[in-house]
Length: 480
Image 1 (cartoon, rainbow, N blue to C red):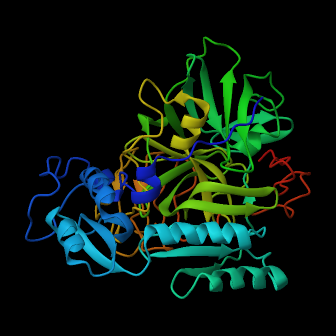
Image 2: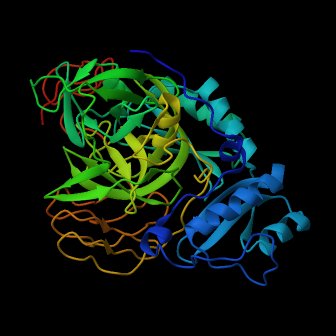
């Protein structure tokens, strides 16, 4: 088994950003399929799909330079909002003529990135995390319940040193830890994790991705507790620049389906890997908590677990609990977004959760999803996100997709029965969807602003006992 560094993201993602497929594109996948190109005069901002916004921002982001302050997709108005630093009329005109909304902000994307680098140097205390939120044009710093006393003072001082309006601190009542167990359960070395997504390696072998803290806990994994191994870890990264592992099937003739099992005979076909977008509605499947949904709240997140610091993650308010590590984060359209890493809280209280981006994991291990291009592409989102509105359709029965969102509030009891995916709506920042998951195929997707983590378990670090928290090496002895 080898350990490799994740290659840096392409400059367009790190510096300029791109909008991924956000909530409006999921709910209205065919809306405004053909849009006029960027650069055409427009008296008012154009309505566009999230996919069209992605293409537009790729062109705009390269042109704005130091004036660029991030961007997000407003699902309610179906508009691309581009943050612009300063009052340069030429820059604003360029954005507006392209059909986007120019929004004046204080902080540039470059300065926000620099702020996160400063935090990494000054405040990498266990129990803290941070990510960039383009909707507030700030770095959101979160501290779990263990950050007290001198550790809190250190974090607060580091945030204050960034200057007024650059970052804010949010206190979490939970405890940041890696999650173990997961989607379709896999077992290794007395630990339980999740199979994330099936992949094909660069030499044509079938395999799957899971969490890196699972990959460093055991070299061989089985699909049954105490069963014969079905796969062997080839590469794993944890902690460091990611939390992912590649496991290849021991039988080279294994037919690895490109889908996520939702339970009750329901599946979602996974078509490709895609970048996350702030505000985007996403679904997570885990063997402990079933199907849950919520929204992306931050990108390029760093979390300081007891086992070490992990960077380059996606932050969400989708709940999770021990047993969900490595599980699939995906969209209704079948885009593979992330692998469950860890977080705090549970599916009763809610919480913050962190996910390894699938695109960077695929690029690092040289694998792809299905027959498509699984590598990191240019169509993803960086510092982009959806706005504060959902769609108003109630959920369908027997596996249909139901959309139950409302502006700035998650919809209640929306979604599909018998294992289908239901939209709980896109809430405002830090307030997610309500009761929008599958009713009879796992837990309901009550993905409110949550601190996702373990409900029953000892503090992290002991690594032992049933229902224990994540121990050294990221594995726990859990069989729930």
